Length: 83
Image (cartoon, rainbow, N blue to C red; front, side, top):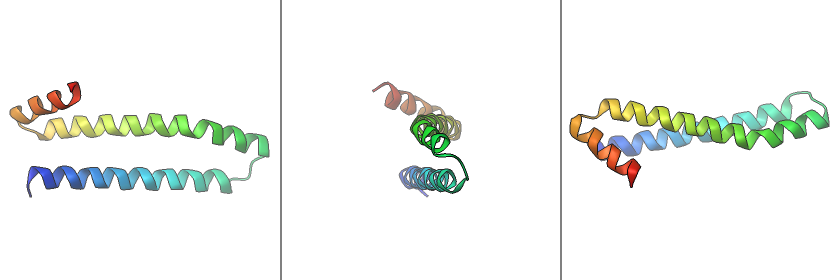
């Protein structure tokens, strides 16, 4: 498998995982027995929590990809992040 195909499949996998996690979180929030005030508070907090979780997952993915790359691949990854 080429490097480009590997990157595409990892990106697709991550996007699919994040979409599934988001749908699951919304379903859980809407089906959990709570008062209207509690549910509204949870829904207001959800976007911030989702952003933080997505950022953490993206950072973990970058670390994993950097570890999988050789010395030249790590240099290329640094250029991508800086640019």
